[in-house]
Image (cartoon, rainbow, N blue to C red; front, side):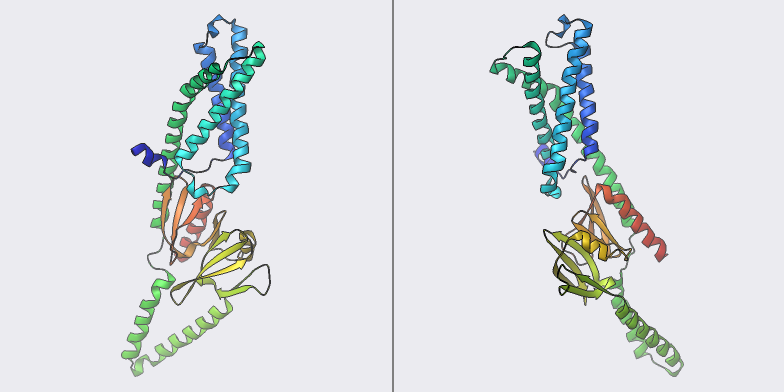
Length: 330
């Protein structure tokens, strides 16, 4: 049961660089194993024949992994929900690659020896490929999962410590309490102070009006105008974007027909907006908590019901933006 639980854990979709390293590594492993241990009666071969045969099967192994990985990255990965990719699915993908390696090895064997192998030989070859590759694959993926999980949990803990205790929305009740206290304890000596506070609030109102943010869709009449600080996050939904924003302490959502890339360009002059994921933009000043898993980080944003993901490749960028805001606040 624990393995079933573990195989359902989130796992990152690997990059092309990962498949290149894995293809070269397993190709060299097969070459070394065949050359050193001489299974399948390879001990009858001369040293030169043994080296050639070992290199041939090693090349086939690496070629299948590289080809399969490239096809997965280009054709399959863009069409899947990355958040639903799990450790078990990653292991299953590797088993499919091993089946492909088996088929190619059988074809190469028939071509080299100019023979037609019976069907039972195919299953015998599959048995050996799985025996040689299945356990190392599972162990390697378990190590990868544990490594990613530890790294991202540590990053989440460091970033969570840097999040201010109170946000702009959380300060409003305290500010109202201060104003209420001033009114109840009014005296002649405090008139100047009250006028100063009123003047500052008036200036703040004008500053807020001048800091309105306008987001437009493909149709210029399709637009949303809100204060900068009210914008929480933007999510890509096919040909639309879902804009999450705050009004009077309540969550509001607005759909615009546009791409996330275009919205990101419209927000380019707002440093606190960061593209954390291919499908998300987030206001880093409204992040309340940071959690980590093997896929990356999960941001709990003020008022949002669902976490905002931060992909592995965007973690350094998010950390830099968050640290810049912390320096500015201090």
